[in-house]
Length: 62
Image 1: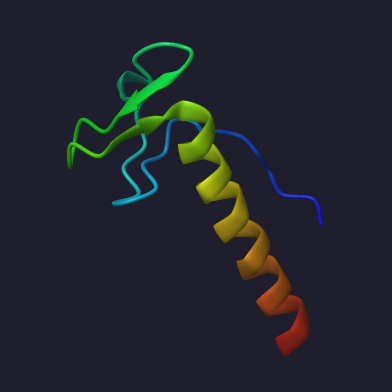
Image 2 (image 1 turned 60 degrees about the vertical axis):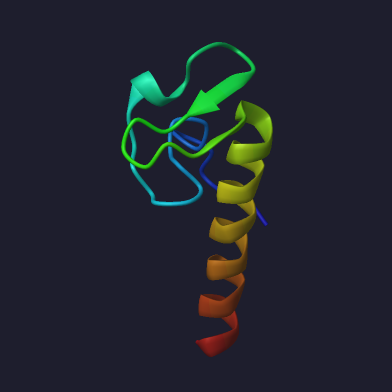
């Protein structure tokens, strides 16, 4: 299932805050709103997984 990856590495997987400042380096993510910190790729993967699951649920409900 295709998921739009845009901003997934800038979006906090904990609170949903989106900001370019959340992405400290290529590998580091730290949310400026809630303080959540993680590897940037792991944070993006969580966001992509959630988006894919939401799309699947919507398709199953239709």
